Every structure is written in C-alpha cells, then in structure tokens.
Image 1 (cartoon, rainbow, N blue to C red):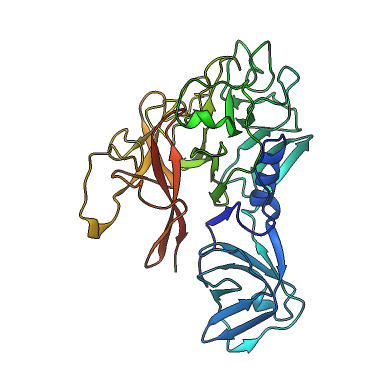
Image 2 (cartoon, helix red, strand yellow):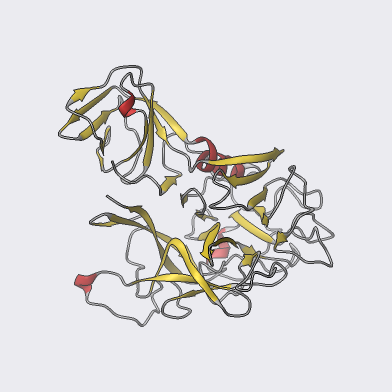
Length: 405
C-alpha cells in the first residue's frame, strides 16, 4: 500500500470550490480540503490485477497523479479507504492494493480524501480549524472570510487569519493568539477607521498588482475564478492561489507546526498588511520572499511567547527568491533543480527546524510549467509558481506530494 500521509488538491478537480471575487469562498476551499473531501464520483468498474487496482469512471474524473482518493461502498472491504493515485488516464486511475486478482462489486464511489482536520467552530463565513491529532498540532487556525462593517464589499478580497492556542467558540479570542498587539488585542480581526485586519490570505485583487506596487485594497478586482492548489498533512498545509484575472500572480500561504525539543510549535505565513485600505497594498509573504521577516508564531527557542514579534524563514542558500530568474546558482542541466529546505528561525535568530513539505529552488525555475510534477523513486514534488510581492518577480516553490513506497 502506498503512503497517503501527504494529500494535495486543485481548483481543477471535479466539483472543487472556486476562489472568486466574493466573500466566504476561502472557507469553502478550506472546508473541502481540510474537513470533508470533495468531488464524489461513481466508479464504473474496479479491477485488480497483479496488485494494481484500476478504477474506471464513466466520464473524465479530473483526478491527478499522487492525489489521495477515498473509495467507499465496495462490497469487498479491502477497497474501502484511502489510496494514493499512481497512474492516471482521462477516465481511469491506478493504485497499489494488497489483494489477489478480483473485480470489486457494489455501488462504489470515489472522492478526494480530506486532510482529516476538524472544523471546531463556525460562523457566517468564519471558521476555526484544528488538527484531529491534537498531539501533532494542538493549535487552532482562525479564518474570518466575512465582510467587515468598515470595509466596502467591492474592495479586494481576503480572509483574516491567526493562530489561537485555545478556543471555545467562533468568537473566543481570550487565549494567546498570533500575531498579537497588546495595545489593540482585536487588531487582526476587527476593522477600525480605514484599516481592516492584519494577517491576510488574499485571493482577489486588481490585475495591476502583478506589475506595479501602486495598488490598494480599495480598488475593485475583476470577477472570475482564481487558480489554487493546497498541499498538506494531518498537521500542516500550504495554500498557493492566484489573485488576479489576466495577469500572473500567485501567492503562497501556510499554517502548520515544526517539531522542536519534542514539542509542536506553530507557524503562520500571510500577507502582513496593517496599514489602511487606502495605502499601497502588501501581498508578498515570507514564503514568496524570505527577506520578509513576518512569520507569526507562538513560542520560540526558549519556549517563551513570541506572538508579539515576528519570526522568519531562511532557505539553505540565503534569502533567495525561490526559482527566480535572477538566482545566480547554476547546476548541470542533467541534474535538474537544486532544492533546499526552508528553515524557521525565531525572533532571536534561533533556527528551530525546517518547514515540512516545502523546498526552495536556488536556481532559475521560471521555464517550468505551473503545477508540473517531478518524480523519483518513492518521492514526488509539484512546482507551484508564485510572485515575490506586489509588482515583484516570478519564482517557484516545490512541495513534496509523495514520500514513501
């Protein structure tokens, strides 16, 4: 059986929720990927030969290699559960299974399996998510994708995001949170005057953001769906999504944990924009540009709270923009790209661990197609394009989507 710990999802999958120029759609994407799974389809036939199961669908299934599916309602229980897709055609998928040659029976269905998280609390276009395995990740991710009263519904769209170390309800902010300003405890969540939020997962801005820094939140984005990909595990995930229509601009976000001294310690990457919606807009994140010292975290190397300060990310070759044209590192073309871990460092400069799943590319990867998959024995990666910042350069991050037999 193939390892199913890592799962990934795409806007192009059947019945995938879309990131549009509207409020609440970020919650729909996170619900589908983290909690419910998505894209249930009937399987026409499911046949095993030589330890490989082939599922045939009546139409194009829109599944992709190394995604994880959940089979259900087969009469033979060996089929029911999660499987890593290793082979695909337009209407078939293949996965390894420990079964003799047979033909499955039943009204069999197949969907993309979720990461297995829980939606601990919910409100109108709001959610608090947590890992089911509270030992692996004991923290909460709060996401507010609703329209704030001080904000115009036609402005740029985003979700406000933050880490909570405890939570008893959708609006419970009594515990420690990150980021946090003790002089304005609700700064990340409640608009005031011409400001609305702090740490933001953006998904709809005007197209000009791709080539100029002179753009603001008050400018109306175009209607239409933006591409997105989400890669994750039971305790951490990354979301890379488009923001514009007609221009190339993807931004990478993340929430998860690193392991340090036997403890899970959380990290959160977002657009750090505490200014007003009339000011020029910040879109870059520490993942798209490690020069940005703007990672939200809860505890540092010593175990003390660091939620009022910023942590940072460091690639193995310094603060390169992953996969950008200007990267001076060269490699033999036959050897492919040079990938480096991305390390988490607390505000005092202590490197605590490498981030899971993600790798920086220290040479130029701009010629690679977005969402290209690279595989080697027992390992596979997906390359996800991103732009370093508002009006910034293009680059590419690489994420592990398969690690095992």
